[in-house]
Every structure is written in C-alpha cells, then in structure tokens.
Length: 160
Ligand code: ADP
Image (cartoon, rainbow, N blue to C red; front, side, top):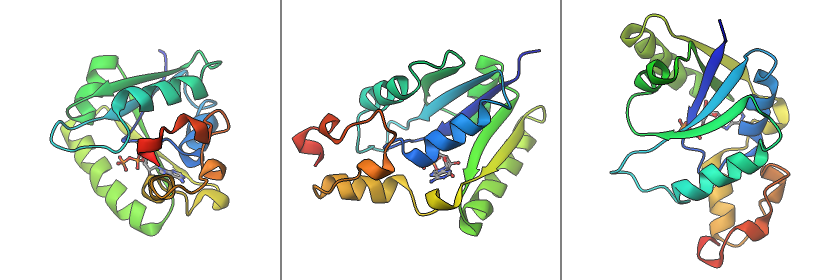
C-alpha cells in the first residue's frame, strides 16, 4: 500500500524550515500532500492562491509532492485522500506541547492515523512564518529564510 502523508499548516508563508521537513520526509513516504488549511473566519496575510503557487513552484520537479487546500478537520482531509500519516515539524518544547495535544486528539478521532514528527535542523529552529512575515511587511530582506525558488521580488508592494 502506498504510504501517504499529509503536511498540514497555514504556510503563511512557506519557509526553508517547512521545505526542509518535506524534503527530509520524501525518503519516508511515497507521497506527501502539503495541505494548506484555511478558515473562512481567519484572514491570512498571503492569499491562498499565492501560497499554493509558491509551494507548487518549490516542488515543481518532485512528482511525489502535491499541494491542496482544505477547510475542515485535518483527520477528515486524511480520510478524503487516503493518508495514513500526518507529518509535523518540531522546533522547541513549546511546539512539542501543542503538537502532542493535537496528535493525541487526532488519534482519538481517527485511530488509524499516526502523526510523525521530525526535529528541525538546528539552523532552522528560530525560523517561523510570523517572523518572516514581519520582515516582509516591514520591507526587510527575508530571502535567507525562504526556499531558494522564491524570490523577494515575488512579494508585491502591498505585501512589503
Ligand atoms: P500551523 O499554523 O499549523 O502551526 P505552520 O505553517 O506554522 O502551521 O507550520 C506547519 C508545520 O511546520 C508545523 O508542524 C510546524 O511546527 C512546522 N514548522 C514551522 N516552522 C518550522 C521550522 N523552522 N522547522 C521545522 N518545522 C517547522
């Protein structure tokens, strides 16, 4: 049976930390679906279409990586696409505490699902979307925190 993992997140924006987790996981799974979760009541900074396009560009040459958006429970998305694994990245003990609760609740709701955690590489520990977004909003150069394929010129003036 094909091993399918989903990597859920808001990816607002997708950073080198996220990219590294996906690339390292490619050896573990046959297919990884990056699931951009959205909530009609919560306004992201970058529009969904842009976040999807950027991720598609980053993994353009990787046939086993797909991107989809979903509004609803992560476990419902897993059932919909036949995924047996949820992939998450861990940076700090604070991440662990949040992720532990989410994974345990997901397991209760859908016992067939397993959450797999990868520890971030040390250089990526301080990288998070909120900080990267802040740098972009204030006109700074966030390129060192963004995947190589994403150029700062991608961000329109209203996003700086
Ligand atoms: P969410 O809003 O669901 O936390 P994010 O887009 O912030 O979505 O993150 C998605 C996943 O990527 C989470 O598991 C998060 O811990 C992980 N992640 C975020 N930044 C990094 C990083 N720098 N290194 C490793 N994992 C990361």
